[in-house]
Amino acid sequence: MSLSVSLFHKAKHFKLDIEFSASQGITVLFGQSGTGKTTVINSIAGLFRPQKSNIQLNEELLQSSHSGKFIPAHKRRLGYVFQEGRLFPHLTIQQNLEYGLRIAPNNAKGPNTEEIAELLGIKFLFKRYPRTLSGGEKQRVAIGRALLSRPKMLLMDEPLASLDDSRKAEILPYLEQLRDQFALPILYVSHSVSEVARLATTIVVLESGKTVCSGPANMILSNPNLVHQIGIRNAGALISARVIAHHLDGVSELETSGGHLFIPLVNTNVGSLTRIRILAQDIILSRDFPLKISALNVLPVQVSAVRKGTGPGFFVQIKSGTDHLLARVTQRSARNLEIEIGKKFYAIIKTVSIAQTDIGIDQ
Amino acid sequence: MIDWLEPNEWKAVALSMKVSLWATIISLPFGIFVAYALSRWEFRGKHVINALVHLPLILPPVVTGYLLLLTFGRRGFVGAWLEQNLGIVLAFRWTGAAVAAAIMAFPLLVRAIRLAIDAVDPKLEEAAETLGASPIRVFFTITLPLIRPGLIAGIVLTFAKAIGEFGATITFVSNIPGETQTIPSAIYAFLQVPDGDIGAFRLTALAVIIAISAVMVSEFIASRTQRRSHSSS
Picture 1 (spheres, each protein chain N blue to C red):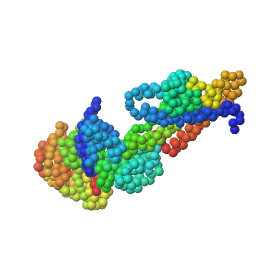
Picture 2: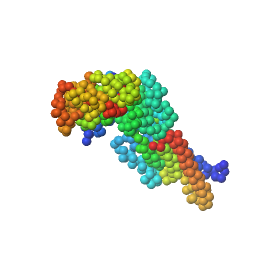
Picture 3: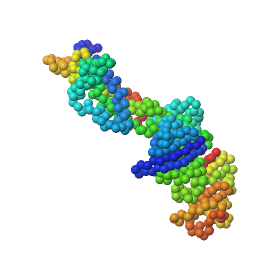
Picture 4: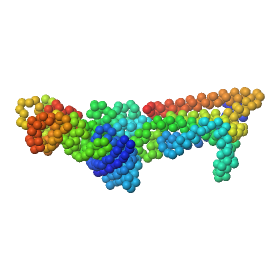
């Protein structure tokens, strides 16, 4: 599967000049509000026609301003989950779910209504009408409806943005399952770093209508030169870790490529693979191995990149085993410790600084 | 059941019903189409079309009737063509009365449906499209069900207006008992003769009953669709 997109559109106060490609897994279009993310995803869906465009999905050319080709939205077979659900108010939940299924070509295979309802936990809603549903329920139905139209790819435009944190936490695991259980590629628009960190396989960073860069999730998140786009306080990289034990005193022990990691007890089986986001400002660097400290995690690391900010901050990319992490220290500490590429340190990470929402289940 | 009406009066009532029913039926598809175009499409000359649709509401009915006579009369350019090619004659026939009523009620029909379409969020139609529905399918499965209350209001309004139409009708198709004499024309005819008051009064009472029944039927249908669809938003 591959989607390649190039768009150009110029309006009065707005210019879009985008180029990226997406493959398996979840590709996240990341950027602040007003960077044109929705316009990009609408163009791919065929709901907006930019002045210049070339969009290709696998072997099929969806649109090309060069040849004038433009496949209308209803023939693209791209499932679209909108920010506000957009359920049909005059249809029951079951009718909503099966709206696209009735139209989908017979040879399009995929999970049936039962399986989707099971996966999303919405079976008990079948007979009800959308207006009686909570925001989280509506969004799950919207996801199910899009999946049941048997799409070649799923487009999601900030599907969690209108929900509060507990609703988000309720839906995120479903999205992880979607990513890992179906071979359905997903293009996901978001401005929330924590969502991105949980879900993304690939990240495309947009800024004022332009593609800044794109790459595998952790390569982007651990790049000290992109902290401006990510947001300094939100900056932080991912470490992949396998659960090896749950301890009775409330911590789970995980194995990473650079050593063992203790995190707050996580609700998943021993053996499952997780991705853990560690915020740059939660990492302490030490030249010597620290003795008698409260923090449970001390990983030997080596500096692989540095970036001096304009403020007091200093970003250090460190390598722990095969994983890259990002640490944020002050210019003063960087000077005192003589932080430079190649130098070895110990990264100290407090267990309690890792929030449950920062722990994603990969498999 | 109808022996309190004179045969002529009964004919007027039956004719009024027939004319109004046909006026509503023939104008409905055009009304939906024009309302949809005015609500959803941007095209050159939209303002002109909008003004033309509303013209019968603003012009004196006699003027509309006279224009109809000029166009659809047997020597009018459309009327002559219709008679030669399709054998349809409108002037001084009940069919002409139906056309006159339909045109006079058209602005009301279009207005009611257009407001209903304006209220339908185009984002829902977009969502249906991304699920694979063609524009025609979107219209019949999303737009039409969502405008049902407005549609019913438009139909009732059209029917009621058609029942009451007088000026354009009498100008275009005259006042021929049994052919073009509807309830209002019959009342008018009664008032032209001495001792016609009784007949006029009976027809007036009947017109009131028909109007009230129409409103009640529409309320009933609307409340039923409301319950079924739960579409309050």
